[in-house]
Amino acid sequence: MAQSMKKAAAQSPVNKSRKVKVRPGQRRSLKERPVKVSRRKPGQGATRNTKGPVERPPRSFAWFNRVLILAGAGVVLLAAAQAYITLQSIPVQRISVTGELEHTQAEAVQEMVQPALAGGFLNADLQYIRRQLEGLPWIYEATVRRKWPNALEIHVVEQLPIARWGSDGFLNHEGEVFHSAKTGQWQSLPLLQGPDGAARDLVANYQRLVELLAPIGLAVEQLAVDERGQLEAVLAGGMRLIVGGDDFLDRMHRFVAIYRTELAARTEDIERVDLRYESGIAVAFSDSSQVASL
Image 1: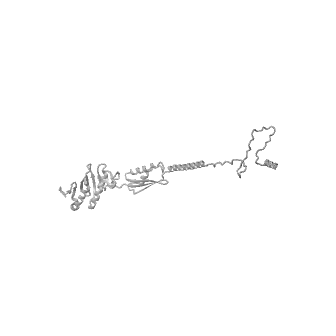
Image 2: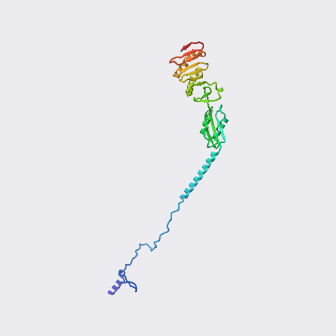
Image 3: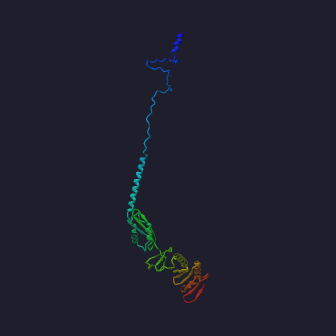
């Protein structure tokens, strides 16, 4: 029994001590080296710890796209520049002039603007051409514009003279003075005279006179203002109105009222009417030296 227990104990795995045989020529270590036991996790096999293939990032072609965009933009700019240069070199082949022209010939307008078109269609200075046209005697306003691809359109508004100014000038509806050698056909217009700078105010007074005198059958042939601002008018038939420089409308309304009641029957005999009174008027008749105060 005892021998069987010793044999079982010798074969039991619990007994970890074992004898190590040393071969001849080998040195025996002073201490017995422990045996390392590998402990693997369940389900983990003995695999070699090797790294897989490294994934490289995809190549970026953004720089190539930028190059294409810049190249395309350059082509577009180059084409636009060439087109602009081509348009600039295109000559103006047609000039049309419209408007009610009585004193200005369309051919003269076309010839006058030709030098300003030497640079081509786009290089034409339209404002310069407009100022040139409005500098002509009978042109009051001009409009100039391009019409694609090679035409120029000019619309002209001529001056409308409402009165003569001095010996060789005219006044338009804005009171602006312009001069022309063609004065023969306009001799029937009323004559306005005054110092430099008085034309605009004189035209305004003339228009008021026309409105006030038209209902009583009187017309203005001449209107003058002196350096002191004193107005004097000559009516059709020779009657002179001395209006003065103050209270223009009050004096004219007074004259119209008295004319209707007292003077209308003797219009041809009236030589002068002085309105420079606070109330009433003084009338000089041509058939005598008598002056009546009304």
